[in-house]
Length: 634
Image (tube, rainbow, N blue to C red; front, top):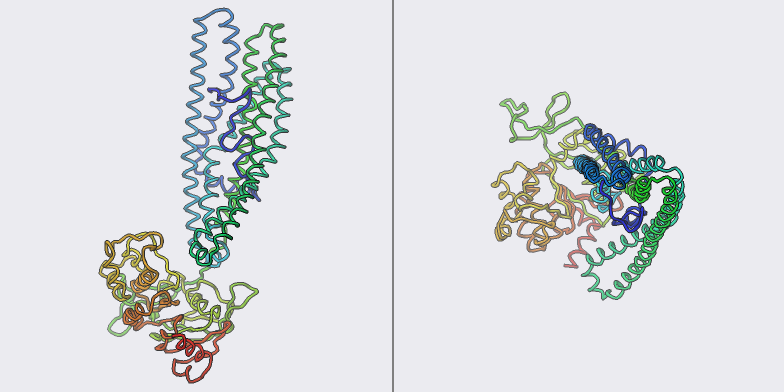
């Protein structure tokens, strides 16, 4: 193998992270090294033939690297000193062939490892994404979006980097080191002892100086994370900063974090910078001592070629040690990253013991139902025994108790019923439990006690996919996906035709502004629909629910982001959307629930009042206070 250029005898190039301290920012130690490696090996096990070939190429490459240096001895002793130039030319051709073979093997195993690593991390990434689709909302409540995103970026990328380079590099460097030491012992055991003494000093430097460097790089990594987080927060909050004239305090906060970052970075670079001159000088000292002692031995033995070959080994013996120290840190960081990925993949998935499914049915002349083999017509619940129950939208809560964790109860014995086609409204202060009730209908969370039935069937007996297919939800927080306007509306029902999409938009009152967009329904939205107003985004959200055409509809403050004029424009459309459906409405404006069949007033997880609008006004209770307060504000 061709020798790398480096600043001193035996001193390898520092690499992008500085010499001997591994990845910039240090590494995270895995909690279960052996267990995580076993899991990784299960993924790599699909490439046994590739990995066997990689190992074979590594052995050949290392043999060429070590053997090529040994050929210096016969080159000098047998051809240069005797003046055999024809033999010298043949030997140079042999050396060239050895190095070319080594280079070809290195290229070969590197290409194979790229193939293996990219396919492996693609498989891990796909399984991680699939797993996240199966996790309950409770898991996402307990983990920030940034934390979960880091699994796809930082953690999987460290695994990819290690598989691409580090694992093969550690094996190659280990083989080169062992081969080099073996050949040095063959050439001169005495000179090898001198090299061992220098290597011991280098290892001590790597341990002491490199350890300090890692510690300060870890502090620098923490500081840069705080700086980046602060900058992101300040950029997102620029409007608030300017409204409250907070520029000075914002700059002061940044300067403090920037100074901490500077101090940590300075110390890290000082220790990293010390490594090169110390290692370089030790290498020069080792080389000089080896030259002096070896020269005396060569004069006595006449083995000038052996001395030249040994000096070549001296130049390259410390290179594997430094490279391994770098790559081991990368591998440890990769294993820690893989461990974090596997923690997500081993998380408890969403529990679904439901056996009742949702099917399309047809009605015979005698009124009996039969399962249809097409995707139109009425819906019905299909029980495990084959019994079909018409989907009507009868939802009932019976003494439901729920809490997001064991230490806190959010709902206290909630009982209510919604008959098919009824509109039920929930009102109350923030945190009263309004949204929680609708989340329980969807089985986003499991109740502690009590029952929730849907058409007489316990919702825990219904498959979650079927249950949620029968429900349409319009959330207060809109989310639009990158794609056309039509695609975003069609998200409610992927098989909907263009005509059905446009009909849903007209029903929601969104057709007018959509046709004024540059490309109408084919206008591409990105950045969560950032080019649209909040009201327009919510109209598309309502159109999406209309496209789904569900028998039960949940409106979670669906019109809170729409101005009064826009609300009046879509009121008729919303009425058409709600017609014939069981509707649960979480009201932000009490004026939107006046026509509800029943209004539930919640406070601290309990229903304190219930009735229609007139009944609640006559009671002069909490609803009356809320309603008259709103009118006064108006």
